[in-house]
Length: 447
Ligand SMILES: *Cc1c(COP(=O)(O)O)cnc(C)c1O
Image: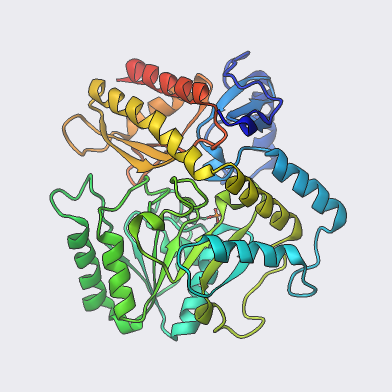
């Protein structure tokens, strides 16, 4: 085990001292109901006080195994000491100027790091924002400005955020879009390669369906950008078949369309490479990042070809808080931690522990129709045995079982039948094994 994984005072064990949720969490949930909009739901109503390594500690003193990383955010571990020190130190020196008013070096350093780490060795520039949705919006703004074209193409099952433009880019209606329209115009959705559901059709073939649709229904000369997640996040960790991403990228190149990789969930060593696009052998024109970038501090970025990123007039991009000094300090510390600890190798180790266990479970439980993902971004899709009929009820039951047994898990997928795993890369292997055993006992109890 990597010695830095022990950099937390929190006991690395699953320890339940009350029911889940415990009495203090239940009291806080009642308080939440009175104070917080009910539109902001919670997946598991345990209130968390401290976290580190692979453990979340709730207000009742329960130690829960964290298989979600706050949705792929605390990749370097929660309250990572390097990040915490950088935040504390930066907060004492300077908390804000607004980079567009009077700049500071940390912002530039984050952009340099992104330009260096993202795929491709062409000249790049970056711009920083607060959230993933904001990064995607800005990537689209830049692509439209640079191409002088209106249309944006996205994929079935895609997820890009909850603002008006990014809701329109997102595929799934409930809960993300229901009742929130009208949506931004000039968004076109094309087929996504979904190997488990595509039958005999390979990646190249599905790419041809997608590009034919663009050709016939939109007109490629009207398209500013194609936005893709190289591994879909909320869509259920769908890994497209080989040739699909490359096929779309090829079409984009031929027609002067900006090819944008949304790596907000898949980036920063999550998949066993710095960025999932590296698996596809495709260099995107622009890449959006957020989530795992800064150890839990709000930071997001667009990184792209210099000629695109420099096309926009000065003042056209920005925001009051984008690239805040404290968030930048956290980002630089998180990136340094990933480099110092070979975080990509940590993600691959997690895969090597999880994959055989999940495959063994599949032998016993044919409800596991598909196992997929890369690195520490893995999922199982639950079905009625021998079919592709979604079994969302089982996903919900398993989720409940894991929660009540002290493992924080997440579901996903268009059909709500995907169980996804996003452990922090600081997860001790015995705890990972234990989380899988809880999942296995969940199958025994639920099917
Ligand atoms: C989470 C996510 C977003 C939105 O990020 P926010 O920070 O929640 O706005 C966009 N794209 C992908 C792929 C995501 O996973």
